[in-house]
Length: 369
Ligand SMILES: Nc1ncnc2c1ncn2[C@@H]1O[C@H](COP(=O)(O)OP(=O)(O)OP(=O)(O)O)[C@@H](O)[C@H]1O
Ligand SMILES: [Mg+2]
Figure (cartoon, rainbow, N blue to C red):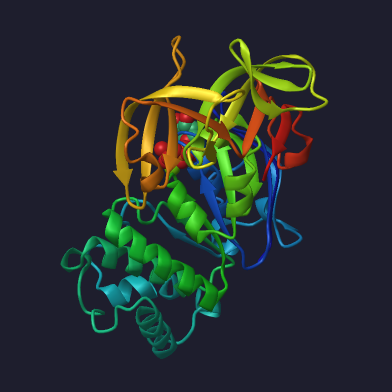
């Protein structure tokens, strides 16, 4: 089912947990809500579920105003961050629960409930464990039971609030892949909360980046990573460097020299240059470029990360190179230039972030993409 969140504001005793949030989720889409702690992810999920009501704004399920529907009528499947299985019930009873408590008119016969629950346990690869109690399962198995339970009611929308948050990295990775497969098979419209960017980028059709109760950017994983619309998104997704620079006559200057990057048609003045560690090229005999002293170097999987000191109290810059190019770089001076980069006007953040990324006034230039 399609879900439309329109101009939602949510206050808790005057504290605005969400401010003017709008989001359209297509039927069958897998959406990740990604943001730091306190950014409003759980609040948004609870509003969609009907566990909270908005201070202002409307949520539509299809073309119907959901505020007119109770939590039951919304028919939501919800998996919480912390295990919320019924401890005194077997795995099978946990999965069957949502169907068993339905009013008689909408409740399937007992044999049908059992069959559906067993099918779901098969889907989440827990066949044979139906008689166990939650205490007799591993953390990953418990979350899979929770997911089966959420899906048993054939929900209009599946809401997952950091369902793998409490699990170790390896198990998380496996469950993430598996969740994507299950989603592709069942096709439930799914909203998945995480503060793990890797999880969001790998799993979701679209990622919603949230900060301080507002949406900073909505886009596919590629759009979010390759075209961040604000310094916040640049800094939050993946690694990035930022440098204070000056624009003069369409040239970008660092301190007292141009660095060989052009920003045509932009007004003169101070700005911040953002670039990712892997988006750099080394320059021989630097006339117009950036240069720094290598202060640390470490091998990370297939690349070498160098930390550079650009002097005069500038924050350290990290660049990433193929190991053979950086092998003997320690304590030497390196000249380089960003190949993909973006400028933001100084100290500027979107005042009222919205979904429409192309209207952000602070975005100046991006080249070489
Ligand atoms: N019931 C409540 N009463 C008062 N304030 C609340 C309530 N629920 C949430 N808040 C506040 O609203 C803000 C958003 O909270 P929310 O739980 O949505 O964040 P989150 O993005 O899910 O964070 P986390 O990643 O830590 O789970 C926080 O500042 C939080 O303190
Ligand atoms: Mg939360």
